[in-house]
Amino acid sequence: MKENKKHMIRWRSFTVFSCTIGLLVGIFSVISDNLPCFGEKITMIEFVVSYLAVMINSLPVWFSLAMVAGFLFAGELKGSVIVGVIYTLAAITFYFVISNFYGSNTVTSSFVERVLMYLVWYIVSAVGGLLGGSAGFLLKKNHYTILILTIGLMVQIIKNGESSWNNMVGIAQNTTYCLMLVSTIIYLIIQGKRHSLYMQS
Image (cartoon, rainbow, N blue to C red; front, side):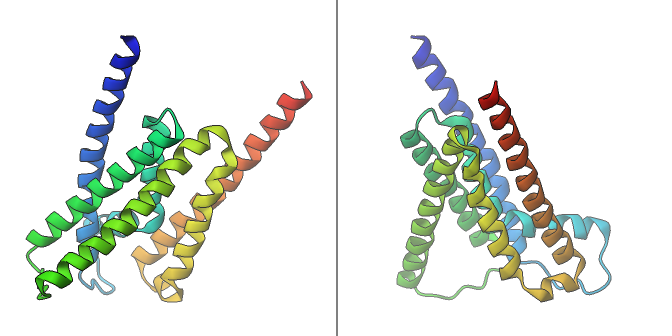
């Protein structure tokens, strides 16, 4: 009885997480896709919104949030795959729904082309959610699993290219990725020392 209650509470919390975080990710991802060219003059509010939008609409953050779902709401590997996929599909669904109602949306593709596009994105998102969710669960077992995220961070920095260092938002984004990389390395060093002390005791 207690196990069933815990299971219900966990799924209820996961549903709230998926709807809340998925909606926010969808909103900021659409904003990121439709950011205007600010030039040199940009207000603080525009900078903050732009920074949040481009950060959230990035592979490392999407993957990290799937990891969070797997870490928090899964008690086994199979469950982590399920919650990772469900969360990511919820987020991509919010993104598509919001983008379709966005004022500047001028997509004129045919019905078949749109269906194929959605199919591809849903498959890619499901795979990403599967990997992220399982990585989040495996992080409980082995802290070196977080190295998967560091690979994503490095790929994103390379993908952004040199031109991304020419504007405030790009600099802030890349700097954040670099800080995340450094934090990950520090985390692994601390965990490694703790393991060594544990083995010696």
